[in-house]
Image (tube, rainbow, N blue to C red; front, side, top):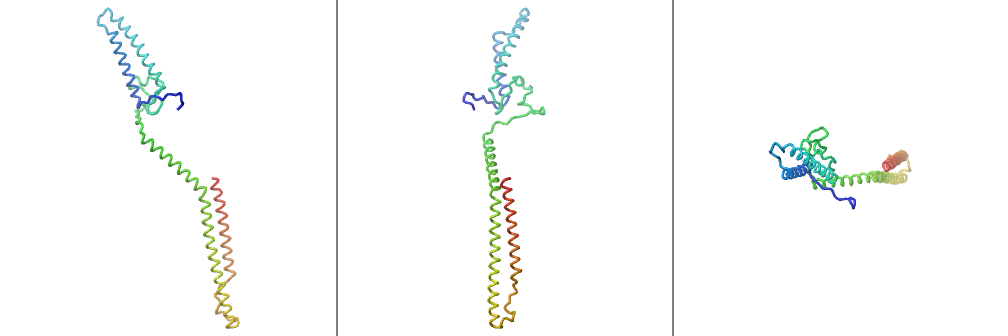
Length: 225
């Protein structure tokens, strides 16, 4: 709110303004009745009625003008009041506050502070969740890549340990066979084909590297997205 701007007068519904207008009109008519009472004589009734009607028109115009000038300083249930006083002159008058776009009667619920606070809290929660999703978009691809690299590393190390153990057993068996039978028997052969196993590990490693490169490309795209 601007420093030099006064706060608007708040009312709950258009009926409040209509109530004020009707009270002012009733008070003005009471004053007119007091100072210009209706005459019962035939000779002066016409002149008095004409004067009374003229005074009534002037007073009602003044009342309506006063309300019209005050409308810019009034808010109805948080909304600016219309600048025209005519919708408040009679309950059946059309008004943007009392009728919907389809022409039916509409009602405005009173301001609910608890509901307002609840909506504000939900908007704050939505903002936090949006920030969390954005953070996951930045960090999740990197975490997935590191987890896959770690799993692949463990698998490769396990395969290498098995290969070394088989090689060791094969070497021990070959030495025992050479010492006992002159190297001609096959009893100590474990049936491990070193070349085929090595090629299988190499292929698995190359496939793993290819998958990692793909994940890296996807993570870069997600970060920029």
